[in-house]
Image 1 (tube, protein in one colour):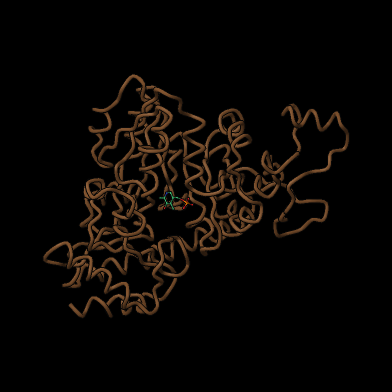
Image 2 (image 1 turned 30 degrees about the horizontal axis):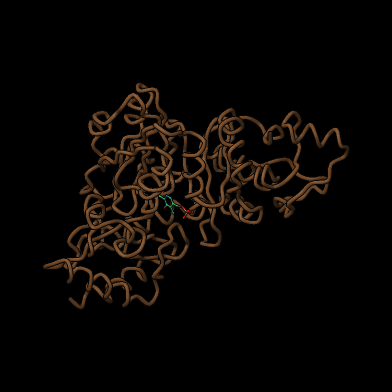
Length: 403
Ligand SMILES: *Cc1c(COP(=O)(O)O)cnc(C)c1O
């Protein structure tokens, strides 16, 4: 579609700044933003052929838009997949996945430590349409095998997870899915294609919230599924064309530009995160640090293998506390004492952000679901940005050093 003007075999750093559709007649160097909902057709016959999908060409931006298509091409190039389909948000990518792949009577196996909204998506929304989901421990490979059914159609994992940074073995889960005639979807928000390419490890669908690292500066909502060209055209496009959870062209353009600096941002933010995790580990007010880059992390070796030797830019930690109420109070106190780090539930921003998962991203879960997911009241998640490490540690020390 795009890169026919580029030579084969370019490094992903080069693709991040160049892979996109061809330039317009004006030869712009920065990618054009096609802020248009409709497209003028040269003849009624062409229009008919395009609407029937018999001929390439744009008709209406719910079906396709050049800026959105460029963003899809660039993301697919980074993930090493043939294609991608962009959606309005990360959650709408998961909605699209379910609508396209599942039907009444199908069974899904999902990690119990996925992003907070993914659990009600499966357990409540898809359940209304007769789709059953079993939640299992992210890291217990045998547990995934044990709950397989003849009707299992999809395995859904996220690695590392939010907010506990649990890491699962993508290759092992892909083998389980494929041996059962099912598909594996991996949410690659946290690692990004810079650190981890799930398709190379056997995953069929790679889910993104573009809201996070792909944008990278906290401006827009966006999502995507990376897949084969055939899956894009035959499985997902007919659904999104009907259901309409498309990405806005402006948001796609922001992502296109965001992806140009993805690699340097992820590497710099990850280096900051490792320094912060190491510092937190030394603090007497901190009971536990969850970060795959630390040797103390339960899946450290797997993470280093699977994630280009890097823990990523998100970590979480638990404050010491004698009971649940004190834990919540202390976590709130640390967050309320910050004067630099933003109290914000987003992640993947150049600004360092901290949040309290138990009352925000995981606030809609029942206490039992939250406990199963290991989200305690003393847990704080930090999405490390490009702030100087000394300013981040000093800001967290402000609240920590008072108890
Ligand atoms: C944010 C997030 C999502 C949901 O994406 P939205 O763009 O907020 O809809 C899904 N998975 C993970 C891991 C996320 O961090």
